[in-house]
Length: 225
Image 1 (spheres, helix red, strand yellow):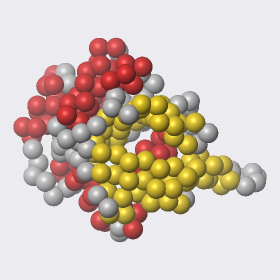
Image 2 (cartoon, helix red, strand yellow; image 1 turned 135 degrees about the vertical axis):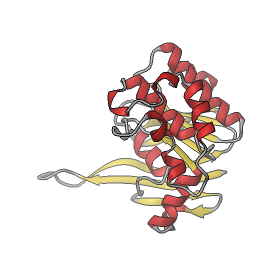
Image 3 (tube, helix red, strand yellow; image 1 turned 90 degrees about the vertical axis):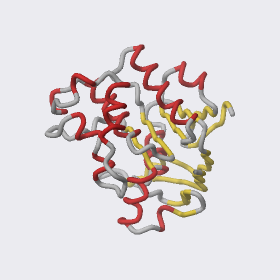
Image 4 (cartoon, one colour; image 1 turned 180 degrees about the vertical axis):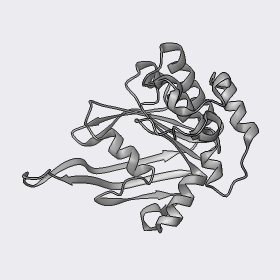
C-alpha cells in the first residue's frame, strides 16, 4: 500500500473567549510505502498525533487530501471509511482504548469481529504468547497495568495483519526490554510488507528506522531516508 498526503493542514478555533485559530499542521506532504518503518518525533504539542490521526482516517484535515493507493479516503462515506480502517489499518493510540469489560483475548479480536475477515483465534493467541500476555488472556482489561494495556493494543493492531500500522507512542508505560520487543514486532510487520508509522521519542527506534521525520513549526522535516 502507498499512502499519499498532499497539502495537509489542520487548525482549531480557539476556546471560548479566544480569538482566531490555532494552526497545528501547515501544508504538509508525505508519502508512505509498504515495507518501511517511518519514525516521527518532535516536541510535545507539535502536531505529531494530529498528523497520524489524519493519516489513519480518524481526524479530517482542514485542507489537503490523504489517499490510499490513489483513493482519497476523506471522499468516502463513514461506512466505507470504517470498513477500510477495519480491513487495512492497525492503530495503537497514545491513550489506552481497551474495553474494560472484555478480556484481553476479546479485546484483541475486536478488529476481526467488526470486519469482514474471519475471526482468527489462533492468530490472536499467537500474538498473546509473543507479547507475554498468556497468563492474562482471559483477564478483563480493566485490571491490567499500563504496560499490559500497551501490549494488548499492539496485539489488537496486528491481529488482522493490516497493510499499514500507526503507532502513537507505543512504548509508553513499558520498561526497556518490553519497549524494544514492541519496536521489534513493528519492524517485523514492515518486513512482512506493511507500512509502519511510529511516533516516538525513543532514540533506538530512530536509529533502526528507514525514514526519520521531525515535526518542526507545524511541518515535517526529513532527517533520514
